[in-house]
Structure formats: structure tokens, C-alpha cells
Length: 142
Ligand SMILES: CC(C)(COP(=O)(O)OP(=O)(O)OC[C@H]1O[C@@H](n2cnc3c(N)ncnc32)[C@H](O)[C@@H]1OP(=O)(O)O)[C@@H](O)C(=O)NCCC(=O)NCCS
Image (cartoon, rainbow, N blue to C red; front, side, top):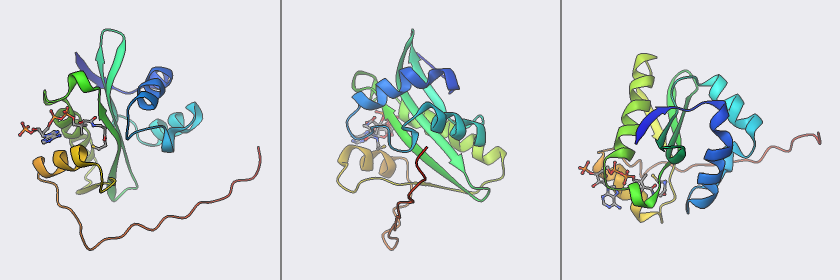
């Protein structure tokens, strides 16, 4: 098993892993173009966990110049409980630290018990007073 930087060539294997992982899906990286754009805008912050040729864990990390955001943190069931999730979070945070970014957020479904346990264990602060408002932007047909 090894943790290494995500590259654009990983998209097909990663998208298969995300589709197969309950609670993840594709969401913001629904196409290779989106994934490429994400990695190009946020180089060296996103990681994959590999076993031989298979991707068995992922984290995506981006920032807006002031705050970092983590997405798609997942570890395949048979690789859980071995510190791999923590390690990937630490690597992304180290990348943000190098860029001088002092705060990072992660949005999670409040019903995801397993995921919420991880953030409590990692000692992240739950912002109970914050609500997230979202708006869909209609794009012109391609
Ligand atoms: C959440 C997830 C990424 C954790 O990955 P993991 O590799 O098993 O996590 P780690 O082994 O690094 O655990 C880190 C710490 O969190 C704790 N932890 C992780 N999952 C936990 C759980 N379900 N219940 C209690 N504690 C848990 C571990 O005990 C560990 O603590 P320690 O370092 O003090 O021993 C994994 O369960 C997963 O992929 N879940 C499905 C995807 C998902 O829902 N992602 C979005 C939410 S993060």
C-alpha cells in the first residue's frame, strides 16, 4: 500500500472506486474535464491510496486562497482502521500549511455516523452554528 499524489491519469480508476463507495459518488468530479480542472487549480494537495494497481483510498483537497476544502475522503472497507484516512488528511493539511492556509473545512452528511466519528477522533471542530446554503447554476448547453 502506498499514498501518492493524484494525477489526471488516475481518473478512470478513481471514478470507479467512487462509484462503488457508498456515501461518495462522483459529485464535483463527474467528468475527467472537471477532475483535470480541479487538479490543475489545486496542484499537489490531493492523494490516492494504492494497492498494486488498484486505487483503494482517496482525498481531494482544494483552496480558494484563504480556506482549504477537503472532498472525497474514502478508504475501501477492507483497508479501513489502519490509519490511512488520517494519513491522507494529514498530507493534504501539510500541503495547505506550506501555502500558508490556516483553516480547512469538510462538509459531511450529519447522518454519516462512520464519517462523523472520524472527524471527532481527528479533533476537528463541528460548527454547529453554521448552515450551508447552495445554489445550482444553470450552464449553457455545450
Ligand atoms: C471515514 C473513513 C474515510 C475512515 O477511514 P479509515 O482509514 O478507516 O480511518 P483511520 O483508520 O485513519 O482512522 C482515523 C481515526 O478515526 C477513528 N475512526 C475512523 N473510523 C471510525 C469509526 N467508524 N468509528 C470510530 N472511530 C473511527 C479511528 O479509530 C482512528 O483513530 P486513532 O488514529 O486514534 O486510532 C472510512 O470509514 C470511509 O471511507 N468511509 C466511507 C466514505 C465516507 O463516508 N466518506 C465521507 C466521510 S469522511
